[in-house]
Length: 433
Image 1 (tube, one colour):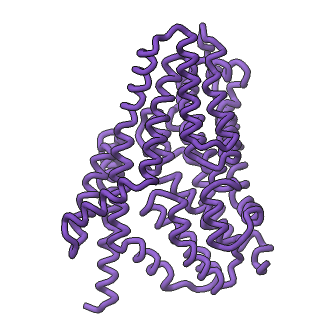
Image 2 (image 1 turned 30 degrees about the vertical axis):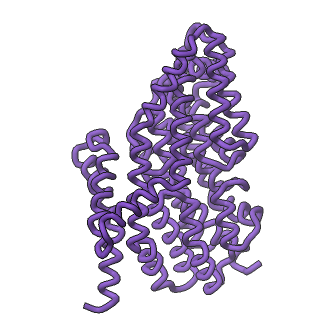
Image 3 (image 1 turned 90 degrees about the vertical axis):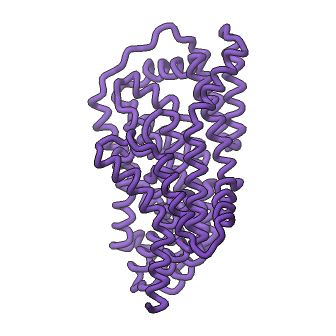
């Protein structure tokens, strides 16, 4: 067997844990017609075990060490802190009545037909302002679930609305990690990348907003919740205001918890009861923590086995022309994002290679940066093991794939990326700046 064939087989084996995960989770769920029958943690555990088995030539203790190192990395631990704080705040806010008070205020002053487009617009605005999709989910997900229940709407649909808006800002914001990574690796200014990115993201967002307006027109107004204390909205005002100020999300959540405890005490709750509410919220995200650890460890083994290097070499082997080069950049960051479940890490991983492809085929760095950021955000919004989706669905108590069919913005964004490559727009980027 030739060296190339051996490398090809080894590469396929290296990325096979993702196929095992998809087989066990998505395929089995589709066959039985119920995404709640196959726990995502079980599917990830099987895929992780497979990742350990296939990594031959390495002692078992070393394989376990690689898995544990990546599962316990600083980025993963940071996400787990956010999950725990979010769970505590969501449960506390719900039990003291802050969610009901906020929803009541929204239903009182916002027309029913504008609830859905209003949620999408709010998520777009907040994420664009704070530059993080996770922070947007933290701020809006609990309210979204309560609004869906008040409107007798589909919780997955409402959650998908917020997730879509969250990734709009994650893609475009000047202070987003993905924007910073994309512009630095490609060597262009943030405002130039923003203008180029608007040609792709804005039409998709406008089309999605119009669709939500049509859908919202069929929504009937829900009954107001009786006997709510309007002052209980203060914890959510604190959360959204501090998030818009660009404060770290862990600090935002901590301030929200302190405010909610204060409002709970003023409303007559005992301090031990409030701690009990927080404990229940932390317990509710326990499965989410397990899923995050398993996914991070499995993806670490894939990288160590050469899976990401195989993807990079495979997609750069047969590039032909500008369209092919742009498509390769889009596919590179998308596939690496699937293997890392982190859009910023994916951009950094393929950034230098993408810049080399761009220089070789005369692609404007503003366009390559736009493709990197947009495509990584698309994949991050659609994979069921992405941090944003896991957090939003955990807070909503639904399957991580439940919002998938309703991610209209992501689907439209895919269409815009394809059109931008086929027709080479924005046109002014076809000439090097």
